[in-house]
Length: 248
Image (cartoon, rainbow, N blue to C red; front, side, top):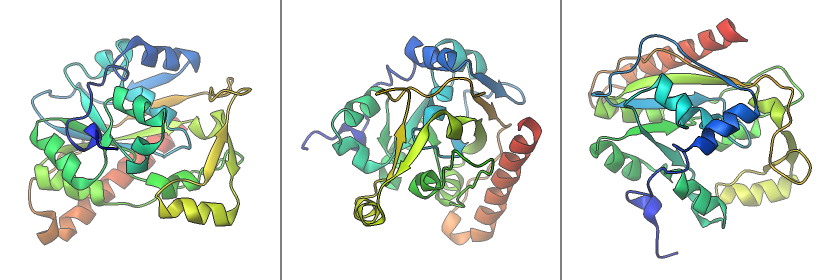
C-alpha cells in the first residue's frame, strides 16, 4: 500500500474516544479503577498494559467519553500496534480509526516529539500466545524496550492490569507449521472464538482493569544506563504484580 498513515501521524482517534468504546465496557459490565490522584496533563506518559490477550479488549479501557474522560481528564494517547495489522483489510481501517500507529521505535519517537502519550501492550505476540483460558495462571513476557523509550524521553510509566480478558473468548491454536509461517510475518497463530459467528466475548465473566500510580522516570540515554533500565523495569514488574495481588 502506498498510503501508510500509520507511519506518520495516523488518523484522529475518533473511534477510540467515542461512546462506542463506552458501550463495549457496558456490554461486559466492566469496572475500571485508577489508583492515586489524577495525572498531570502537562507531563507525558507511557501506558503499559498487561497481559496481552488474544483480542485486546483491554484497549477499551483507554478510551470512551465517560470512562477515560472521568479517570484521565486532559490526557489523550496513541496506541502502538503491530505493523502487519495495517495490511489486513478491515483490521487496518479499524486500527486507523482508533488512532493506532505502527509500534516501531522511529514512528513512536516522532509521536512523542509531537507531545503525544503512548499506550502499548509490551508482551506482544509472545505474551498473546501464552493466553490460556482454561488456567488461572497469568504469564507475562519480560520486554524492556518500552522502558528504554520512556527513559530516553523522560516519560513517566503508568502500568495497568486487565482482569478476566483471557476468559471472555475461547482460543484456537493453529497447527504448528502454520504458526511458524505466520510468525515470519510477525502474526499470531492463536485465533479466537466469540459468541456465535461474532467476535463478541462471552458474558458472565468479571472484566476489569486497574491503573497503578505512575512511575516517575528520569530522562537519560538508556544505552549508557542499562542498570537504570533494569531498575525501572523492575519497578514496573513489582507494580503490576501488586495490582494483580490486590484485585485478583
